[in-house]
Length: 508
Ligand code: SF4
Ligand code: SF4
Ligand code: SF4
Image 1 (cartoon, rainbow, N blue to C red):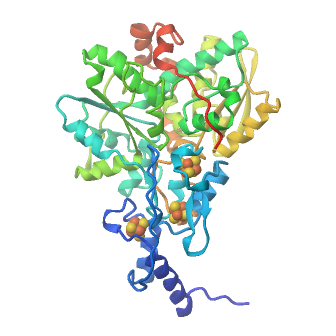
Image 2: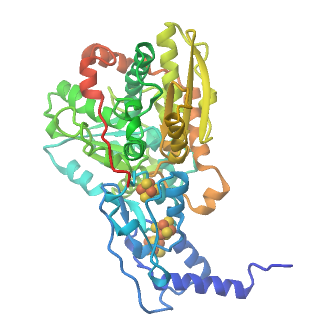
Image 3: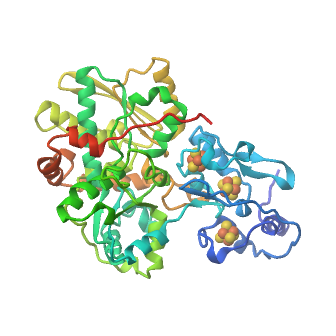
C-alpha cells in the first residue's frame, strides 16, 4: 500500500480539522501567554486557516485559578489530553481527565472540583506539554513591579540553579546555553537591590542535610532519609504516603533557606526590618508558588519568600522592561549570597543533590580530600538510579529518582520493607529541575526529536567541570555564616531558621 501524506486532499482535510478546532476556541492571541509559542497558532498559519470560517455554538467554561500556581482556561483547550497523560503517567497522580462526552467534553477533575481541592501537587508538568495557552502558571509579574516601585521596600532576588540554563531559550538562544552573567545583569537593571544566587542556599542545604543524614546514620534515626528540596514531591508524600513523612529530611528547600537567611542574617546585618524586605525567587518550578505559603516557612515572623516566579515569567518581565537581553554584558552575583559552589548548581539535575551531599559527607567523615568528586553513578536521566559507596568503612546505599511515578515505585518498596537504602533523592520532574514545570516550553516536535532534559543537564555538568569551587563545605560564604551566625550545622539556631515540618493531607 502506498500512503500519500501531503496531497491536496490531505492538506484540505487537515485545514478543515484545525478550522473546526478554531471555531470553538477563545482566540485571544494578542494577549495570550503562549502567543508565538503555540502549536495551534503555528498549525493555523502553516495550513493557511481561516479562523472565522465556521461560526456556531461555542463552549464557555469558568477559569480554574483556585491554586496559587496554575490557571486552567478550558476555552483554549484543544482536548489533546497530553496534560492528562503527563499527570497520570509521568507523575502517577491522575487528578485530571476528560469529563462529559461529545461536544461537551472538557478536561477537569473528578466531580468538577477546583484543582485546589484535589491531590494536585503543583508540579506543572501538565503545563509543559500543553500545546496551547489553556494551562499556564499564575503570574506574579505585576506584584514584582509594584514592589520594585515602592520606595519603602528593599527588594532582593535569588535565582535557582537551572534558571540560568533555561532562560536563554526564551530569547532564542540554543538549548543548554548557560546565561548566568546576562541573567544577573538583567535582574540588576530591573532594579533589584541585590541579585543573589540560590546555589548558595543549596550549599547551605547540603551542610544541614548532610549533617542530618550523618546524625541519623550514627544514632539509629529513621532511614532511608529522603531529600526535601522539591515541593511537589513533599506535597505528593503528604497526600499519598503520610506514614513515611518521618523519612523526609527536615531541611527547608534551598528556596526557603534563601528567604530565611535574607530576612534574618542579612536583614540584621543591614539593620533592616524584615517586614520591609521583599524576597523574590526565580524558580524552574510552579510548585514553589505553593511552597512559599506553607506553614512553618517564616523564620523572621514573615514569609521567608514573598514572591516566587518561574523562568518563563522572568523572561516576560525582562521583555516587558524593554531590556535587550542578548546585548547585556556578563555580570556577577552580589555578595554574600552570590558566592556559591557548583555542588549547589548540581541541584538543577536529577542526582545532583545526592552528588553534592556525597562530596561533603565523604570529606566530613574521612576528614580528608575525597579521591574523586565525581559520583557518576547517580548522574543521567534514568528514572531510578542506585549506587553503593564506601564512606570510611560504612557501605552507604543510595537511590535517586525523578518523576513522581518513579518516586511512587520507591515508596512502595519502602512500605513493603524491600528497600535497603540509606539515602534517597527525589525530584518531582522527570530529569529534575532543568525540566521543571516553570521552564521554557518546548513544542512536541522539539521534545520528540531531542532529550531536552539531558541537553540542559549537560550545561550544568560542564560548568561543574570547569569550576574551582565544587564542594559546599568549602564555600567561604557558607563557612562565614556558620562562624558568624549559626555556630554549626544542625545547631539549635539552624534548626529554628533552616528546618521545617510536614502535614498529613487527604489522599484525594
Ligand atoms: S492558545 Fe494559541 S491560538 Fe489560542 S489564543 Fe493562545 S496563542 Fe492564540
Ligand atoms: S500540576 Fe502536576 S499534579 Fe497538578 S494537574 Fe498538573 S501534572 Fe497533575
Ligand atoms: S494539554 Fe492543554 S490543550 Fe491538551 S487537553 Fe490538556 S489543557 Fe487541553
